[in-house]
Amino acid sequence: GYIWGHNWVVLAVAVELFGTPVSLPFWISLYRSKKHCPKTEFRTRLQLTIEALQKVQTWISLEISLLADGAYNNQAILKPLSPMGISLTSRLRFDAVLRASLPKRKTQKRGRKPKYGRRLPSLRAMAQACRGWKRIRVKIYGKLVTLDFKSFVAWWPKAGVQLQVVIVRDPGRKRKPTYLSSTDLNLKPDLLIQRFSWRWPIEQLFADVKTWLGLDSAEVRSPKSVLRHAIFAFALVTWV
Image (cartoon, rainbow, N blue to C red; front, side, top):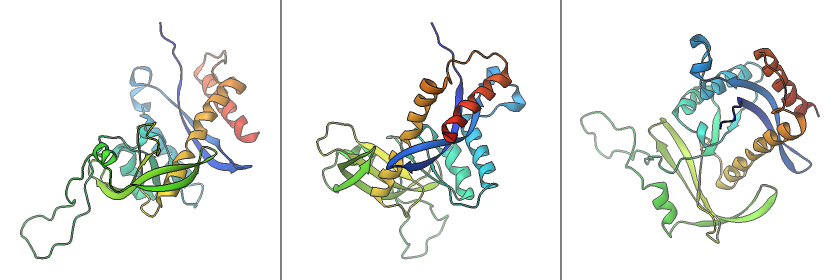
């Protein structure tokens, strides 16, 4: 059988309390599929995210750095974020086709000037190559760990943005490499890795809201009640 549930888009502020990163939710939107939503009201999860961030920018003048899982690292998010001045740090899909920056032309040539340089090897090929690895100590998920990494700047033509890319692996090779990226090109590899690890508390947030605050056990039926109950459950986390 099937278990039907709600699909929420949640924005939270990542902060460190008593040495532990936590997520304090402040915005939730209920995603509804085309089948269960009037045509004029339908929004994808990515569109809901962009609309929420646009609203947030009208509230504050602070710089915003967005952390999200790999499902949000695509052109539908990256293209609108660029003119908004918001950077995105996320997991990068392993099959992303990346290109180098365009080298300076020594002589003038006819025709349209290309925007990107040569195509780079695949991320998997780079991860399998022996050269170029560096070792680093970084605090992630509450522990100080040793990691191997490679970092470089590349264009992602599909999304039309330039990325700081970091390939991470554990020295013992017990886990598969992880591919991370950020549109903040000034972000150093150790800070990029650390910043991405701050995304995990939002997963813990979902578990806490379900386990302790009854998000998934409310006996409500009307659309307004569904939304109000979820708002109250998430708000309790931040208030507490």
